[in-house]
Length: 109
Image (cartoon, rainbow, N blue to C red; front, top):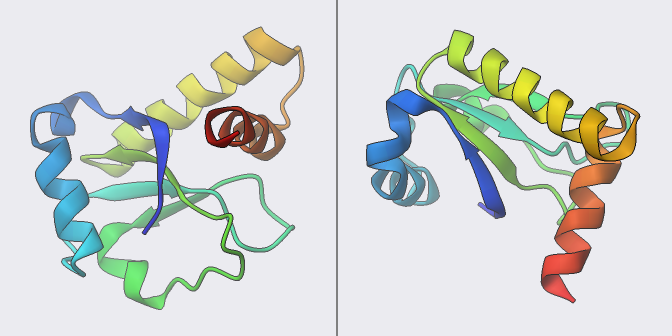
């Protein structure tokens, strides 16, 4: 699993961020944890996925990665709102996926 360098992290999981990330990479799927992903296909901006369901989620693109992690669905929705506000403030628009991809290019290049 790839992780966005400036990962959005919910308040309830901040202290256990590293162990959650390692666990998810190892295939553990803790109930109650939600992951915000850049989707593999072109249809969606972002995907909100419960961690227990990640084994069924297939990335169609090697560019997809986790951009956020939260301790509940409500917290994940709050993170989505924070992301939208950040994108809107910086770009004046709501092209979330394009914003993340531009930021990824800057950090990789």
